[in-house]
Image 1 (cartoon, helix red, strand yellow):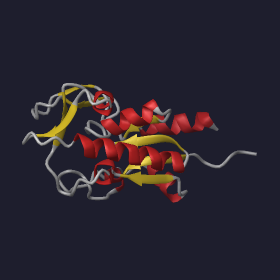
Image 2 (cartoon, helix red, strand yellow):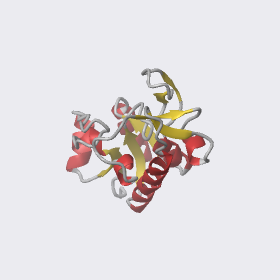
Image 3 (cartoon, helix red, strand yellow):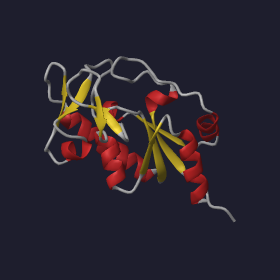
Image 4 (spheres, helix red, strand yellow):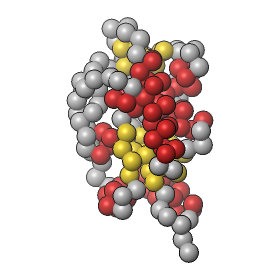
Length: 166
């Protein structure tokens, strides 16, 4: 007898919620995601809102490190105006982790390149739209706690991973 379907933590902006820093959404139209939503498996979260940041809000990037360093106080998330918003990013990451654990999420689908959610690359902190390898704050915390993180361009990989879990 198969177990209950695995839940999936998903960035709220990918589900059409206008919660990005610029007040917009990044709606993803994908049959896998639509099916998971229909099945009630999707747990939406916006770590930046969960950390207390407003919509809209100034764009932010991680300077001199990546999410793991921010979590350990070795790097900061700042706005282009040099406001340190690291505390809100860390708080939001912990809220996202608590939500994922409470709902027993097997995986997360987070927004690529985001200082919160980026799972493979993030902007480099210069506000010049330059990417570098690294994870955002929430992605790093989830991975450190055993939750596999994908981005919106990897939905086929998410489906294959979930199928492998049974």
